[in-house]
Length: 280
Image 1: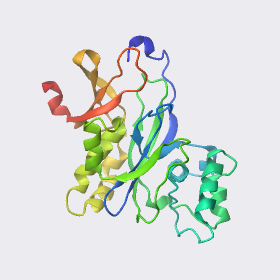
Image 2: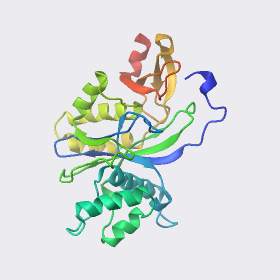
Image 3: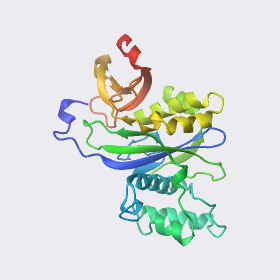
Image 4: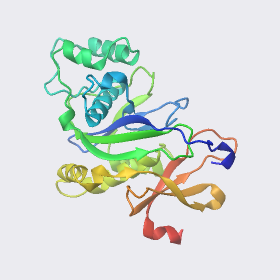
């Protein structure tokens, strides 16, 4: 990004939340955002979005609970996956679910009131923090995004939201996602590239799911990633981004920067160890 395009005063990050869902086959759920999307255009991301007032049902609701409710609401809106303490009743038919998704998106119905009408409780206890990401100060749109991870039984089939905010919702193996990204078949931004790479690493061994939850509940899950440039490559076409003092000090993300006159945000291209940055 050129200096002329950098905001004079950094924007205040908006609170947001996203959810990584892993099924029994260790596939993760990704949604495809359209090219005209204001954030993550034409890319594959985890379901999620900005915090709404309905995510804070009472004045005493803790921030972490608000973020979890946001992640669950956005996941339902975008994919139809409803994570509750008990299964939805048989009276909540697919047409009614689709109607509720649309109404919640249009703000004619709140997520809490929808759940209450069917005597359902959101399963916030199943969500584990899995890093937080703060958009660089050089970006005009900034977010403080809490990522969560959870495992689902795979019985609910994800679907897009009628192409309102997403074009598709599908489950893929992490290794396949990384392969498609490398081959240019799929656009990933730095948070998704980093997290999917790490998840693929943890799931590759025995008891992979257990390992993911263990690291989520440890130091990894508490890390705050604040990407910032540490080295420019190829005349500015690629930039090595460190992940901040509160983030992962062992890894960096190489991003590809859109050329002059091209729209879009920097996208993740490669994950490298910090010790190898000097060799690039």
